[in-house]
Image (cartoon, rainbow, N blue to C red; front, side, top):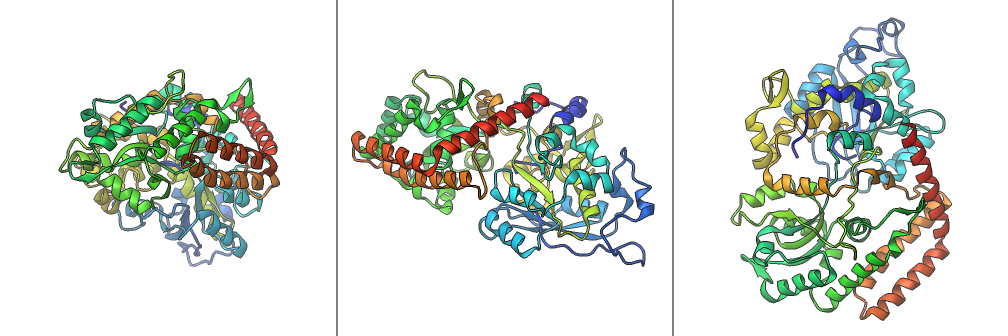
Length: 557
């Protein structure tokens, strides 16, 4: 599906969704701002004469473009980009005066940020997954500024570009909003634009699937039959040993929530949160995997492979079937299509379905977004920080980071920005160079707003578009409200859920490797009993309260 121009409806959408921050959802210690005059800066509060120049209709970053360093912690240990070498980052620094020092966690982001909170020294900007427990701790522990208060004081233009919808969505009981999300989608936005941000798909290796006669993978019988055919005839294919199956995120994601979405397992029934893990269709399919293991059709490598092993197998098309987000294949598929076996790329097909044969109900984007970006109270430059976020949330800032510099990476065509053809081609042929040297498109996604940037995206290659279109067609647009209902943090109910989740990660491999169905049932019932003892009833009560609150918020939008 080609992205639709959204400029005419942008203002209306911005009131429903905050100036989102991408692509899905960061910085560190601070240094003093170099002032343009000889007078030293004593405090982070604005000078009286600057205050009088504030205008809610004009971005305040233009009032001061003197050099300043802001550290930005990006809570993703796999994020490998730097600031200051790429064209886009140099251009933004040249324009705003803000030089960004990017930092990423060496291990788990939650743990590192928690240690930072304990030390009392946090980065200027922090981007964390909206689901991370550290986010609430930052808000409730008074470690980050209320963005609305900073905007009132230093840059009221923030409210113009942020929009009221997401500010309301993230507003806390005290009336303050502490984070700006990226990749945030409201149901209204998705219905209006057709952009669902759904990325869950069931993928198969195209050439092998075609040669096998496009077997039906939607029923337990068809699924097991295809695996048997694979074992009998295709243990190797075009010189590569084939692994039958892969599930992204292992037990907590691929084999639980993701598989349940493929099976269209409901999230609620009659207004009450549904216990999806006990759904009969889900149990049937877990038993199907157990049968596959018993027959030697799958092994446990999909539960134990390291990230390095998964990457190696993916890059060499060594998986047959994958429960996999298509966005994770957007760089691999063009590479496979251009390789020695050009038909070895992956395509989205109907995977496991419920006993009614219903299409999947895949998670779309939602109001939570991917990551939320905050301004810490450790910063010595809160005024420059909020003004920088305002700039990045604006259409100008989105364009500068996404497209780069006019005349170098993009031109105006019929009054609209358009990426130059050589860079659109590079997206499929040399994305590493595109990101390292030019830093455009999705290199710096921490404040990405899909409402704005998707109108500038080049047309996707067919091997990518097929997966995206399939996911969009099966997206359950209104189900985004069910994301993140589980309790997080240090509360009793959060601890209970943590114990349940950890036990489930241990139990599911036992279910798949159980010697027979009777052993499967015994293991599962034992888990349910332990789950009750851990406090599952309280978890369900929490989920219900959270869902009711979200419904009320959506009704108020």
